[in-house]
Length: 433
Image (tube, rainbow, N blue to C red; front, side):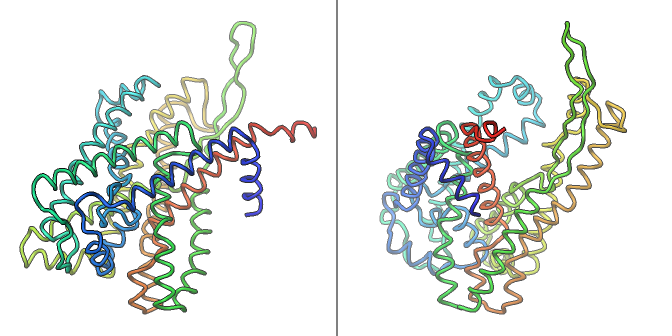
């Protein structure tokens, strides 16, 4: 911890890096301002009262992933979720669609085209999400149990302005994320998601302390160990050694060096959890439209995180999406072909198809613990509820799998990037030699 603070202090002493950090912090502050700024035509008092009364697994998850903005109908209500969803869809499509796969292999120009397609898809998803949220708010079904109207004016013109405001806010969020990536420090969209999660933490912790000080202390201590465990697993990797043969090019000898392929235990990252959460949220949105019997069953089983069916579906979806995402994003045959093309080989394994089979075997062995690790993180809050036997903490548990993964993953990646830029400008180690 002291080393990290010393590294950050050294980063602020470098003028160029200090400007990048301040630029990033300024854009993050602008992002949070847009998330608390209410959209035109929204009854702020009614929304505040209804959001405070709406508690439960899905509603708390939506509040956590949107930084408390989506259910409050703010300007940046959709946050980064449309862009994240569009990026995941394009990443999956670039593997399955031949045209997009060809663009991905073209290098920087092809990647620029894919980025442009991602922006278009983000706008389309933003229109869809904003229309759905505003329609539910207009019908009084966005927050069940809320008798007060959330919109001051429910005319078509007012609703259209509200939808356009949210879509424009999504475009601004996308622009802010790309600015941070280009001119700031770290990945812009990841930092925005990190900001959303961290922003609601103080309120969750304060509410938990008021409801049960004992539960607050126990969860805080367990949270420290949970974060340490997540850091350990996120850093764990299987290093497959690769040796490159020497090649004579002209009068110079190239190659002969050894390296390794880092295969992480959690190769899928946070994507399976986001997929599973999104799919479990869809029945909740559709429940008011399915009638009293079907809607009531969904509300009893898939809204509360304590129901066995909800837990089972959550775990199965995470495990299934982990295997699916890893299988289409990591191609052992392509990796083996690239190794052979540059004159490399895995010691003890023949190049070509045997190498691809070996990498696929290792990847399958790593995906299993990675999938169950994500599922275990998702079950941490439910286990905590059972141990503490305090229903009040069920609605305010901040150390869920999604939040911890986002905080730890983005935090580690950002700190590594800052450390790398500090080392680029520091030559003390070479001077001491």
